[in-house]
Structure formats: C-alpha cells, structure tokens
Image (tube, rainbow, N blue to C red):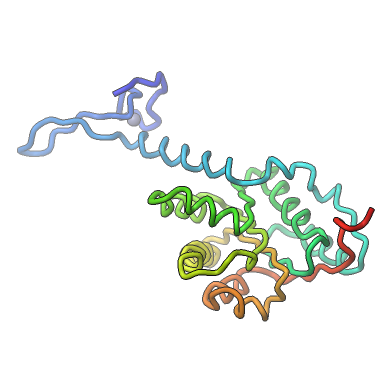
Length: 224
Ligand SMILES: [Zn+2]
C-alpha cells in the first residue's frame, strides 16, 4: 500500500489506490479503489502508445506530402477533406504510410486519442504481451478513438493472427456503428482481394467502415 501523493480522482481513497470496505455482516478489509483501475488503464494505454509508431512519423504531415501522380492528388484531396476511416490500397512505396500518418497527426492535433501501428508489429506486440494480450487488444479497441493499421495482409496468416485481428476489427466495427470512432487500414491488396488473403469476416468489416482510396505511382523509395 503506497501513497503516490496523487489525490484520488473520485475522492474515495487517500491517494493510495486502496479503500477500506465493510460488507454487511462481514469483516472490514482493503479493496482497490476505482482510481486504481483508472491508473492501470492509463498505464496500459501508455505502454501501447510506445508500441505505436507515430514518434518516428512526426514529419509525415499533409503539408509534407508531395503528390506526384494523379491518384496521389485524388487520394490526398479525399483524405484531407474529412476525418474518417479509409482503406488505402496500392503498390508499395507510393506514400500510403505517409497519408495514414498524416491522418493520425491531424487527429492528435484535434485531441483525438490516436494510434498508428503496422499489422505485423501489432501482432508481434500482442504475442509479447503474452497472457495480457487481451488487455492490449481491449486497450486498442476501446481507448483509441482513431486507429490506423498499416500493411494489412502483410502478416503471416495463422488461426491465431486471424482470431486476434477479428476480435479487434469486430470491436472497432461495432464502435464505428454505435459511436462513429474511426479506423483506417492500408494494404497493397485491392479491397476485393482482401478476403482471399485474410479472414473474410475481417475483410468485410474493414470494407464496411472504411472509404476506399486507391493510390498509385512510382515508388518514392526507388526515386532518387
Ligand atoms: Zn482512489
């Protein structure tokens, strides 16, 4: 029992995160205060933010995006126009990640809790979280008001990956329907081919909540 010096947000404990309770007919005992769970949730979210890749992408704004190709102009205009969920697809190296990062930076600027992560990295993080993985998924699904998933379909598909992704995408989809939280996804797979690679139930929900945007052009990585 440690007093952190913080005041209890709910005015229930002395800041230690513990409260004494006496049930009817029972003995007085200590129990976690409501503020303890709140702090735990915050800690998990911060861990997850560290896993998120936005810190390496701070330069990838709408302002620094330089469309070279007609589809890149169109994609830029469409995505710049509104904060919502997008499915960005096209070949590698044409700036999909830049546009995704720009949507996240814009959302953060509007104080929308936002996370960007590649799907292979997300799955790797979930694996490392071990038996806490459901907490990580829950945190992503519930706490991020905007989630950008880069490189969908690039992961090695197994029953485990598809189960994990389904749980997440299904939750995001339900919340999109009920309270308009947004999820964007990028992939080199055209939307109609997505269900050939990943679980069709995941692909369906992605298509249900994301506006489809095609990006083409020469690879920025190859250009000198
Ligand atoms: Zn408390």
